[in-house]
Length: 99
Image 1 (tube, rainbow, N blue to C red):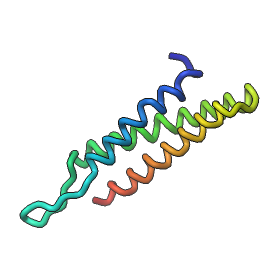
Image 2: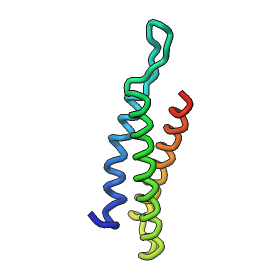
Image 3: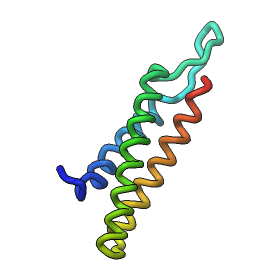
Image 4: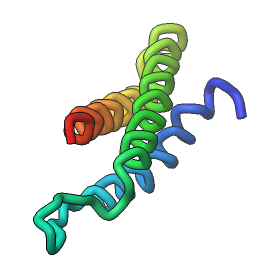
């Protein structure tokens, strides 16, 4: 793995992580009226933070490669995908932090 492949790997990792957050983050109400999620809260926060950091780094590397190597639609799409995933993970972190 080198710096040029990292954004592609980050996108490939982000899809299952985002699906795990969506599936494991469903709120359920127990018999005693207490709210809980499918995955433990610390797990949701760890997945969200890992996804955020990986995608921020990948977006930065993609933008740097766009600047150094010239404009390319494929590189721009990868940079945009990493930026969108980083915003999605950030919104999930904000969603789960006060719970």
